[in-house]
Length: 71
Ligand SMILES: [Zn+2]
Picture 1 (cartoon, rainbow, N blue to C red):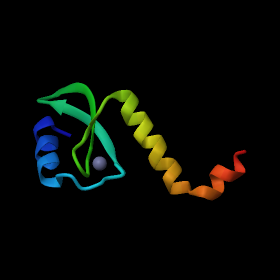
Picture 2: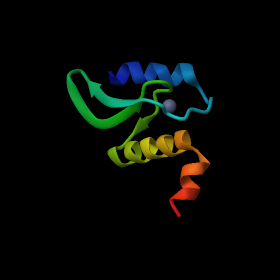
Picture 3: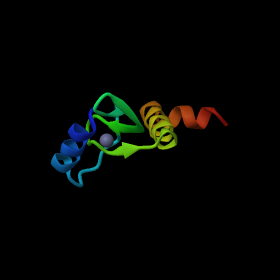
């Protein structure tokens, strides 16, 4: 997603909560900014934050049953 498009998304999304279901690379012109951005709310992530958000989203999708059985 384009940096400016992400910025616009953030302004439109405001303070609503978002579970960041889809995260893309962020570009400025044709160059990857090395950051990632949520296509729903426009929030920016570093690579590490992006991986963490994806992991959290995956866990929240699977639910408690899987968490318990992993022990
Ligand atoms: Zn989001």
